[in-house]
Image (spheres, rainbow, N blue to C red):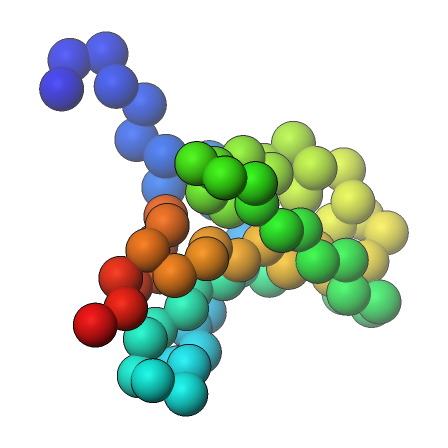
Length: 78
């Protein structure tokens, strides 16, 4: 789509994944060190929403930004 922003470039942390009890893969990014600061998305947002937050707070601790199932980089459950 012309003019669309490729959201994956806004995520600056290391992308990781965890498998849920039902096999759905949940993806998250981490950046920084120390005490974890976890960012949870609202409805219709993805973890890319937090890129300015991640820039600022990764200097103070470890920022974890995750995507709910079916949002952003996480898989849609079966």
